[in-house]
Length: 450
Image (cartoon, rainbow, N blue to C red):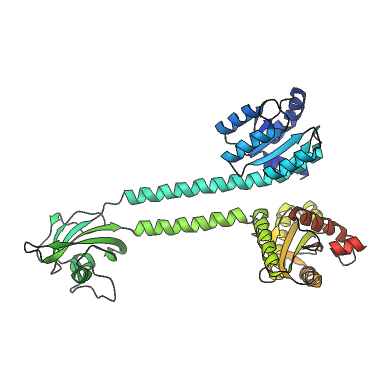
């Protein structure tokens, strides 16, 4: 699959807002955009673009800068107030430093010069689409979490809470019908005790087994809340009981009035919801195929590692890893085998990491490793050599031995750059230089000196 096909696979799931006041530029660019995106909304001014954004769900904004009335920067600023995470790409017919600075301050995702070159458009849109898809996935997960929460509320609302009056001698004087308790038809027999009706016991509950509201009430003489387990048939139901003191005519304690909320379903649903939240959080930060960190988690971990390096006055090594001749595996053995190779390679590299390192999949067969706490450049070379040594053993897939090699480029913070984008570019450039290096490993410093 070439870059354009990969781009279509991403952008075909997204909606674009395209803002351009030049009819000729708009017409020529629209032909391409309509082929790429699921939906394209077109505006001829910043004001119209803002109105469309407010009315429709938009994933990416592609806007010209110079427009009459509200310009692209003004529109993008107002859009960012509505959705701070929206992906914005700026178009301009001028290469003006002030425009670039303003774009950086605004936090745009890309900057394209007009007339638009196809390769530049593909590169910028590929990166923007990845970010937009992740953001769309996060919004989807948030919506799903909200739906789960509503579902949980509907469960709780449908529970018919038992109400009972229990005297000081454990006799149940009144118990409403509840689908979770034995049917009593209202008033119960005078000999019926709470421990017998609810638990099938012949004596009051053992304090070491469960909290007895009546026993607690005798001591506290105030409203209390306790959790109580009650077996019903072959299942056990958990109730949250609110017990309020019941006084006789002489104002003496005579028992309690209890309302019980059956919370078994609530606890189960809450547990499932928490598990689902954890699952969705994991999916939002990890590559589906390899379960390694994805670009979003990689960016977060890199920022954390840099902050830690600044505090501890040490370095962060950034290693870009590319599998050599991986395309040949996909072409000759098929993408399913290629996917399994990526999964096994990911596990092999993961096993070779130090504690605290972060390995991410950042492209088809490209990986990135964040190695914090580096005090000398030789440490990162040792890490790279360990990775290559781990990859020397051939993989076995469907009885077929597959040999692989990799090339690794290394950049160091802060030695090579204080700027994250520059650091990434340097590591990537070093990786490509490493392909022709005898050891298949090269650092930025080595590349400069060679």
